[in-house]
Amino acid sequence: MSSPSGHTDARRPRSALIRGLRRLARRPGELVVDGVRYEPLTVERIERALARRGSKDYAVTFPGGRRMRIHCTRRRGYADLGSARGLDVLARIEDRIRPGDRLLLIPSGTGALCPRLSHLVGPSGALVALDDDRESVGYARLRYPLTNVSFEIGGIEALAGELDHAFDAVLAFDPVDDPDRAEYLAGELWRLVVPGGFLAAWAAGPDRHSGGDAPDAARTFLSALSRLAGGTEDAGSSAPAGSGSDDTPGRLVILSRNPG
Image 1: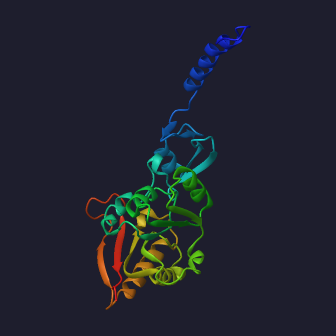
Image 2: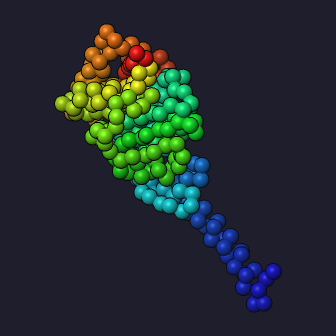
Image 3: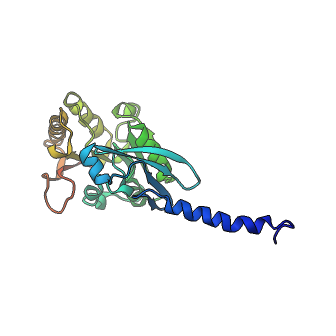
């Protein structure tokens, strides 16, 4: 029903015109995925921006109106933008995960692996997704509101209060860049695996790192895990960088803890 003055009918075409102009004014590269809108703050394509400057910024609007600005880098990737790591690695270990499992993912990054892991453990399971990057955790909480996933801010120190054998599986995706802390991290993560559970650790190849001590840290971390498996645990599998159909160069090691 129109108002006596006819103003309502007059506003309708004006509103439609404004919406049309807004659509025309969208920046090149604007993207909407599952109701999440990504507005690039520069016109440069993301692949070129990452190659030249190492980063690209977006304004993100989530369903319900929540907004945040994200800073996509070579290390902080976003699955919706095609730059997240680890999905191909997860495909190689997901058959070990069972409904009802309690999982730890460290670092969890921007949460790209969490929807699949959430599905694998089901409503009776749980996933603790831990990362020390506030932007990544803040984004993941808004992008993936999963009832059986807890996105937490923190590094390995945040696990100090966890009891031994707290998780059925620990998934560590390139978790360390300091060789002096690599052995401590390996021991702390292994401590958390239940008898009969497993630890899957992936470390990036040198070409994925920005330099510095990161490649040394990865080697030290994986070596420490191998020593933990010596004699009593079974090194379930490992794969060298660039092997098979993997799109993420690196090395995957899976350690199974004996049930007894």
